[in-house]
Length: 325
Image 1 (cartoon, helix red, strand yellow):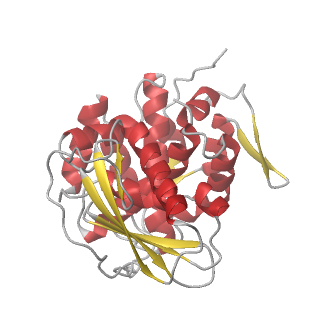
Image 2 (cartoon, helix red, strand yellow):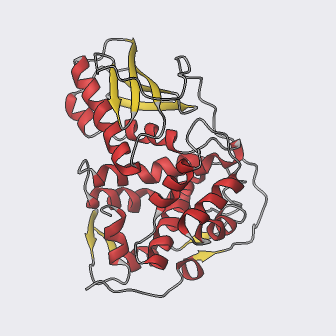
């Protein structure tokens, strides 16, 4: 049987730390603009798929190539794009924008490198000369970049909220689609989530903009939102309700929102004050998260580098639901 707990996670796991010293914010670099032309929003064209044109989840994705030739056939590249877009659409109910210009850029000697997203309209993903079909089957970069289209643009100081959401959601979306395993998701999180915790001199996520705080601090914020929503509602509400609620109000990657609006819509979509309360503790102040205590409640442990689960832990049902429900 699933064990429940009435424990308020934020009261136990979060500490509203008082800044010990002011830190100079390190602003993340601004990526160069992606290539492509804006697509008009509206109804999806009824034209059938053809090379370079993929219809998924109510959206049309147009695919172009630049740079060196990719070492895989176009049909393999297009299958990768379709698979990634399908996973995102299945999680959200539809693809978050009506059209997307996607450029695959051949560059370097490795495999799938990194991607860039802009305005819910353009994505560029870089692939090296060593890219093989298996790399594309197991890739996470494409899903990460597509998820950026499911969240509005915010002011620069709130970039952690955008990057953190894609960082947190990407493995969840893939796990639900059978593209990765629950063990792999938690292995990655237990290895990397601590990078998001505040260090000495750090302030809230809105103030301290280091790499760790931007990506993993943002992911840690959304993890806490997800866990507390599920705990309070017995898994009836989750981060998916937050994202779907924002999209229902027009908050995709083509929109410019204030963070206050994101918080208000998130709370309204879940019927809770979870997002606003955690924002006050982690963004406006350097609230810490006792990750070891959180993992113990969720029934997650690392032994010799491997992840093991305790299904008798108080929040084991929450841990299970994150990647499956």
